[in-house]
Length: 279
Length: 288
Image (cartoon, rainbow over all chains, first blue to last red; front, top):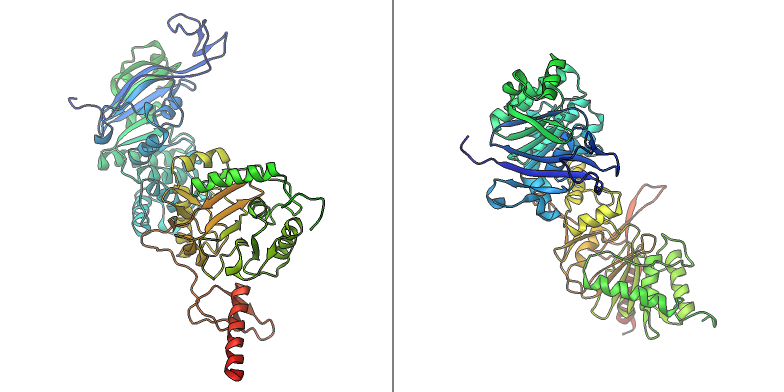
């Protein structure tokens, strides 16, 4: 690919705890997985660099505790990073390290350039506001002050994700898990963000609903050309969605490449274990 | 006046602290300044915030008016008046234009206020974002970041549910283009009176320990979507059954037996004044 990536992450670190003389030297083998036994510091994300190109889906796989979700939270500014840089290739942010911006500017990026779908809809939706209100929230945050426009956008999105319109004024708390997830996707898409983060979106859904949601994501990518980062521990999901895949273990990227390549010919022994245990 | 109490109930240190918070509030229009709300001889939620402002501001020459939902004679207004009077010996009045300091619950008087007057409003719930965010540190952050999508979302929800904004009172306002503020539970009818007000408007929340202000000549805009403009209560075609006034905020009275509704000025002193004027004119026409 010759174009510049839309999202570029360099040397992202996220640790919980201050670190000690025992563990600050990361090369030395003082850590148990990503955890320092002497001071209790957790190195959740270690030196992660990745590129996301326009219109592609980047898969992130790894076992529980490998730092996938923490990485997503860092990228979506839900949590502050310990070190590292990220740049977004949109005109008003060119060349800027977005981790260094003020919280107000970060909020603007979230509202205009990012969409996020959490594993648990409770984090992404306001459960006691109507579904259409949830979508409007993001539009309001991005500056819309016309009810008719927001209602029209909301209706269009809900139709796209197959929520019957007669239920649009209902609170998502009344909905099934799959419906909640689809409302969340509609909300994340409301501002036509160039970048969408999907964190374990199908985990916990039954198979037919999973297939629905995956279809929907594929369709969105095809129709709108949105770039996505998809986190999952389910290799089938990754195989279906992702163009490229990175494999994380203990906070580090241990392998990356085209999804087919990684899944058919895994190089790292952990990836081999992961792939073969599934097949 | 009781001999053994301090002037205006508070010791000087307390008054100073409240005045300092008040000055800060005036300097940052619409910003909620925390203050050390004192234990008062009336219960929290009965106007202790307003009362503390009144007591810290009142001087020996001042004339006080206290209103409770438009009425000068309601129990709460009378008790507050008595307390201030007993601890200061100042004069009280019911006539809006004669008062220097007006403490009010849930109304702004019908008679326009002047630059020599201060309006003190009692506030039960000073935080316009509380309904969307329960945590104080989060609402503080939202105010500091000018993040008011929550308040807008509440209005949007009301439009979705009821076809219009359904805030009967306490309709949120933008102050000086910066802070979103709860104007206290005044009817929407009174919101425009805050805009470019001649008088200083102070708002005190005793239980929530906050003081905030709208200084004179400050922009106050009621929140409204572009296609759902702000509307105040309409009393078109309705007049007061006592004084005949129109275009003022009315109470609706329902006769339990006949089921007939009549309307009456909510501002009792305004109504009385109209009646007095009419009587004067009548007397003058007969004997003059």
